[in-house]
Length: 211
Image (cartoon, rainbow, N blue to C red):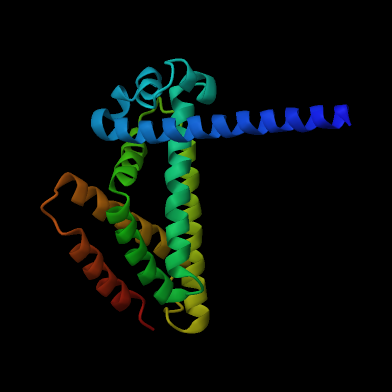
């Protein structure tokens, strides 16, 4: 009985430690997002992130190993939110309906999580630096997004909502490239209407793929 009680106490302690660790990572990830918005990549140091999250300066290094490791965590965290939003909006839709709903989902994601989106864009652009350690993470995410869009196109062709002579992979590239381009333009020129850009692109898309 005593041995069993000791095991239960030990398990509770490990669980509590795991929960504390997860909470620390979450807070530091959020702190990193804030600092990327306020100071950019150069200003989002491990020391600054740890202190902003309310921890000792060395805890970020302990959890993530390096600045690149923390940025990979930020990219993963924001990507998870986006994919969840996308899946909620698109659901069982396929073809042209899925492509158009995807545009609406992305617009709402940008409006609903502006600081997360900006932090992700800062890291995406930063990954172009030849010295970036997180470029593979960005490339992997984009490949996954193109794969999903290409599947929507294939399903649309099978269902008759998209022309059969369109190459799914090429349209997926153009679709994702258009979204990224519109978002970048809007972030650089806030006077532009992001909603109007998305709406007009949807109109062009419908004309482009119409059987």
